[in-house]
Amino acid sequence: MQANRVRIAGELSTGSLRQLAKGEISAIHVKGFYPVELCELIAKRVLDNADLDYYNKEFVADVARLYTPYADAHGDEVAERTYHAEAIASIHATREIFYPHISPMDHARLLLEEYWPGGVALQKFNSQKCFGGIMRC
Image (cartoon, rainbow, N blue to C red):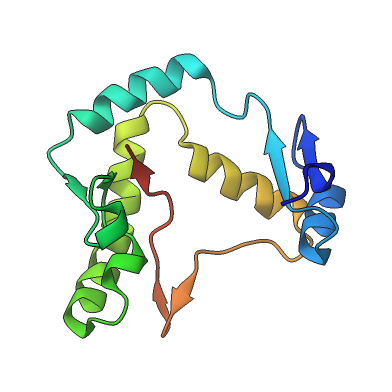
């Protein structure tokens, strides 16, 4: 990635999102997107969570994550069914971890809904909703 293509923005905007979609920039880094104090609080909650588990992939086996990412289920029919069956519950459980604060993923989704001309929605595979917001440590 070329450093001159990275846009450092104080907030998301329709213009910066259009630049990203057109490939004119590689990323948007919103400094201070989520308060540091809340990150520290949530990190403790994540590390203490009984559902904290590790990836099933060789090169990231030492990375813990909360809830199942699609990458760990993809290609295994039973795992994919389980993943989709748990997707909405995982979103709700994530919100509970952040309560009474908004999660960064929900905050981002709201901003994208407001700034992207066509809005946004949860990703779907085979008409089934996906979980977004994996927390890693």
